[in-house]
Image 1 (cartoon, rainbow, N blue to C red):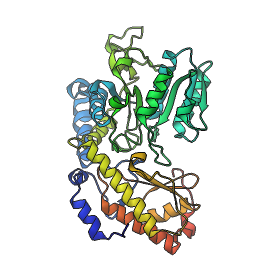
Image 2: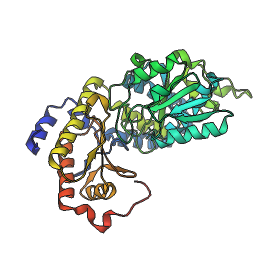
Image 3: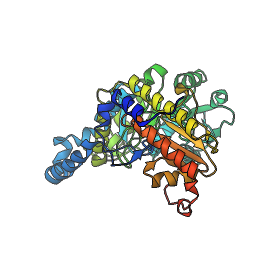
Image 4: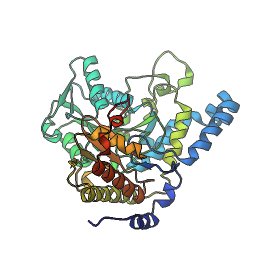
Length: 411
Ligand SMILES: *Cc1c(COP(=O)(O)O)cnc(C)c1O
């Protein structure tokens, strides 16, 4: 592909159907942000919403806000808005806890339903929290074990497997799995699948109903733009809801929390997957993030993801050849998510040198450079700037400077 110039990419931005949505985000002057896959950008509306929530709702309404401002309805209300983004019904999604905690709740609920099967099946190299929570569940429940399929999960599903736990888009390589095919394979063998959609909801067109998915979780602070540490969501297909019970049987999941009775009785529907009091301020910030998708066509969103990532791959390969970058992301747009990763022995220092040039991507141990292209607000101009800076850092060897070698606590 030909090398693009600033004029070309600005023309692409002018013709972008997501152009207006992109303007509704805070865009720090001079910053090229290619890390929406780690922490989504702030919607401008969130600033005013947070101020009003603190000053008027918390400050003025105080405890009256639970009913008066419907704080109590936030988990289901926001879940209902996320549902449209993932091809679910509004009554199949609820916002609660973190992704890690939701994985725990659904894994344990699934294992209980699937007795006497006792195996959680996943793959080596999956997102750490998914594997760690599975290990914790295995260490807590008698007879449960985590099996890691070395050669493909689909082939390893058999009649001993209770639940398969997989990410839809891999956090490191961006490889996208076939939701429908793996779900169908598992169902044939009598296993459930818990999908982690942290890197797909808000970045791709996901249709859980069409794919026959029954269980899923996902993150609120990445492509849903809910802010640092935003609450996560979980999905349970309607037909399965009454057959699953949460091991974290807290009062917010009770059929009537304000009955204040002594005996737990799960709520009907998704409310049963709540545990404690929702973090209202964080919920309202997440709602602003999710609201930015209003009116956005998910097919057009996925098309933009494919175009941004494809352009980045082509331009990096054209401009940065011979510097030792290895693409580890699939080349077919249907086979990847919204980030692009390369390996390089000096990945960490290269990412630091880019950050010093106000181009934010991230590093994933041990040798991955990862760049995210959140389709709602990333511009083609950002792609171009990201490529220019990377080419410059590699050509000048700027990454070799001492100051780019030191690692902080969060990488
Ligand atoms: C980001 C991410 C999470 C986040 O988990 P939290 O408990 O919300 O911090 C979980 N799974 C995957 C695949 C992720 O990418």
